[in-house]
Image 1 (cartoon, rainbow, N blue to C red):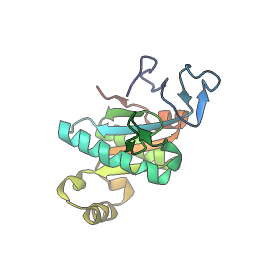
Image 2: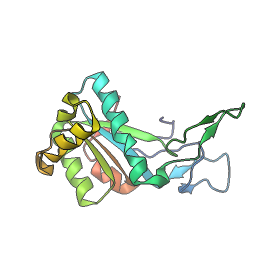
Image 3: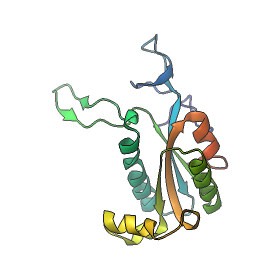
Image 4: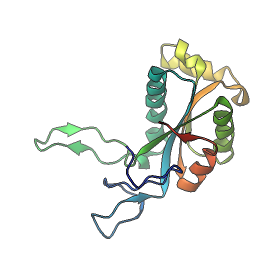
Length: 167
């Protein structure tokens, strides 16, 4: 979800509740500005269905490695319970294969929590085969079609250098 205050660099003003926000803590109506960023980088030659599938798979891993990204559970006015979701927006970017490969290297060098999706995963049908497909290829030879990354906003911005916001 993007807001009016979001820039192409990915700075986000978010009016939802969250923890770990940098500003806006004193005024409940002030935008919450997060000092961290959740970003997905997709290769720009993917089909629409692939973009959605890759994004869903990639972000599913971030909450397990970085539980602080998960907010509180939701309830409606009838007290129906819903699962908790990320406490902050997920920004989706796109770039060329070369941009994705460079971003992967920068994420590794910064030791940021990350998830990868390779082209081989489009032909597998289960978690075991997915992990085996990634395991079979050295990190610098992965045919990446997507990557999710989480960390301090400035570090994630540096990882995403050369990428552009997904249209």
